[in-house]
Length: 221
Image (cartoon, rainbow, N blue to C red):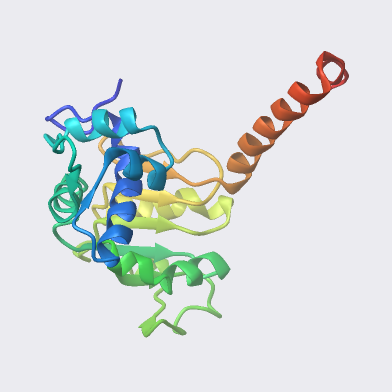
């Protein structure tokens, strides 16, 4: 199993931490100071045993009959995710998706600060989006304080954008373009593919239909 850091937090656990943090934020907004593993599991959409196992990797075990201290646990999860500081982000591709990401207030409230927007369309370069002037891809220069690059371009432009981001010294890339990006080994890439997620959903839907209709439907498919 892949490990997220030298402390040995499993990658699967890291993937669930943002859900725990969101649940803790919701509870904190309600003015509550403690939460049980069962309720945290329900809010995050996992099993309570999984919650306890995941949080044990952070050294948090809760108190029997009381649960977890909401503020302290949120602080632990935030620290593990590196959210004790703001991470500068550049978004490349100012189509509908890129503009939506630039205006998404959830980035700022979750530790990310958009510092630059870029596009290669001459009709878009120089326009203002969310108070920032859109730059051309060529205008992005090494030295720009960016930790995370977001690729919101069509597939045929994604590799060029990734190359530019790597040249800027970016080691973390989130791409919404289908396909595999070729990057150095020390660059982490996360891919969000809506079509893939829909296909996974239809797989589960198909399995439910098979369970209801019997093997005849499976053979027909």
